[in-house]
Length: 106
Image (cartoon, rainbow, N blue to C red; front, side, top):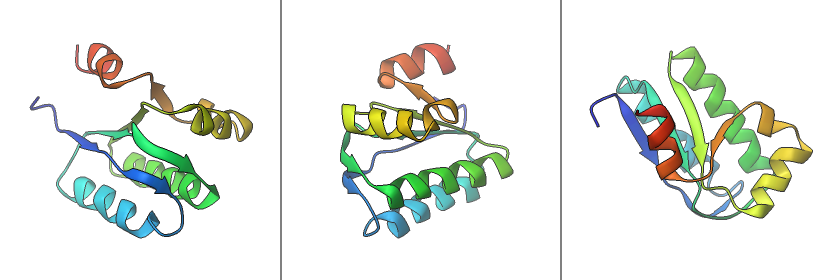
């Protein structure tokens, strides 16, 4: 997988207590020249408005750095949050890592 792909797998609740740590992980990946960033949310149980905000901020930073950012493995709560805020139209979301691999890394 030498396509410049970097995977970040946060866990627990993505809220105000985790946003700085998450943003640092994304920033470090972008500083390394990552071209494809996958945020795998399989271990995230809940996202609040702070978590959604950091995802949007990281997407903007990724785009500014010439990096494509994708999200996969979202649960029903995150899917509902994305749909209510229309973020499902902003983020490219894959059902799971296998779907991402089959589409992006083909």
